[in-house]
Picture 1 (cartoon, rainbow, N blue to C red):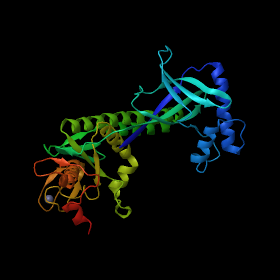
Picture 2 (picture 1 turned 180 degrees about the horizontal axis):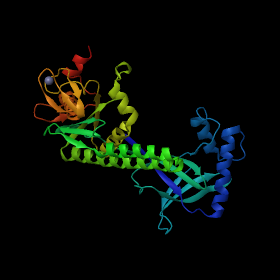
Picture 3 (picture 1 turned 120 degrees about the vertical axis):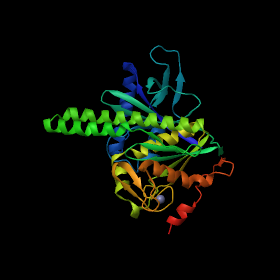
Picture 4 (picture 1 turned 90 degrees about the vertical axis):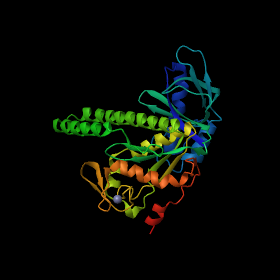
Length: 348
Ligand SMILES: [Zn+2]
């Protein structure tokens, strides 16, 4: 399976001469986007734009696409930065080499794909897409089920242990704190400060999501587990409830599942998504319909089972994925999740 990511690189202290080649190329490209007139753009850049982006692009500032056949990447022992990237410029044979600073170290086992050139205020940035082929393990010895929720970011349960692990509780606190802060800043009319804080909240939440996803993947690696998570996206339109809307609107659900999937795939661990509808309302002990009552507690009127609602959700997701497990506890992975008794019953 191919996985890809984007390296965000700042063009680092380019010389005046290089800027004198780079700036007109970028500006000519912007004129071309707006008016279709070509005052000098490298041919493959223009062709890439015409082929891939022109139809969708509105007549405003666009990143300049750089085809991977026209770029080159090099590591040097330069003191400024070891990373250099060659980009094509009209009329300049061999293009120009630019010193770049990526946000993370570059690993050469990845293949370089398309890059995009941006200008933000005075600085140029190059976003480079890189990709790598990974193969996923096909057999596992346990299942790690995850319920992604609002109270705790993720409730995890291992098929071999069956005790709840709650992760990312602090996100709720961060969000509450920032909601309070926003209100106060708004009251005082401190709008510039307000804007700054928005980025800060996002970064703080993202940091937790990175830690949580890293922990989950390590847990799966240690226990040789396949990861199973509830798929909110798979829920039919008609069945979107209050809880669903709340999670989707207020919570970076997609981001967390993306981080988990990405980090798992890097280690060759498969991630399976099962339909999440009803997992929060179904009793994980008897399968009857129960209720999420106060303070994140789940209660089943049928059998009297009481548990943390997120744990109950994770147990339901685990139950749904147990048909992966063979009698000896081994798990065979197939890309299509099998129908379990529970999903069959709910299909009616
Ligand atoms: Zn029950």
